[in-house]
Length: 119
Image (cartoon, rainbow, N blue to C red; front, side, top):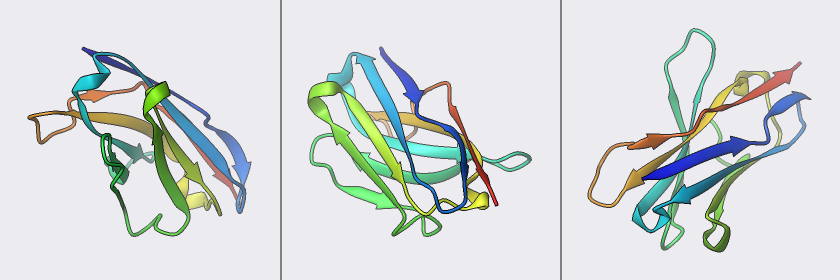
């Protein structure tokens, strides 16, 4: 099994930057893809970005393209989400989620980290 722990959230002003981290432990060799997903109050979970764990191919939601960057450090089994030019609309709980080899869904989730952007 794989365990995920996120960190790096906080309260910032609009225009600021934050970097989220997601540390994976356990059977990390079974990770195919890692994603960041967020959920704002009263809204459904929203895809933010994803990265292929082996080759590093990335994909982003249109709402964050050009402002957020997802990356990973395989040696540290850690994925990052660098968030620049933050907006109040980015306020949400951010979760990292893992897709395992052979699966087409998010198989495992972290506990989430709160990001609050004030105007």
